[in-house]
Image (cartoon, rainbow, N blue to C red; front, side):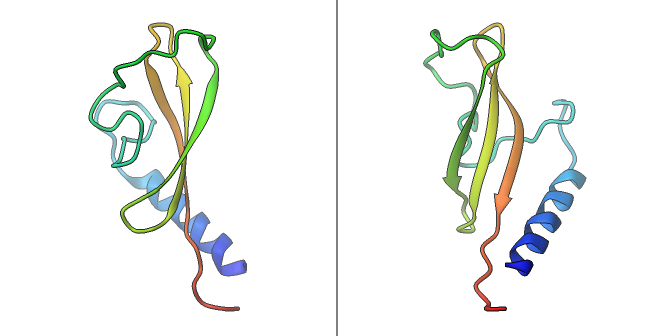
Length: 92
């Protein structure tokens, strides 16, 4: 368990060091992200502007990824946070 926490903390620190391409301090979409390849075709018309939700998926390395999105005034989605959960396969 201790190793999982350390690996998760290291992943977050490493993710914070990656450059962004004109998106402020927000993470870039990766394969599996809702906004990877552009905004989705459907709009969340019933959700209030400013509301947020989580999206979970498994990345190409087999890690569980949780992303947080915020609904913008134009109904587009803004990826604001990513948490990568690295599972420890070694026993403590």
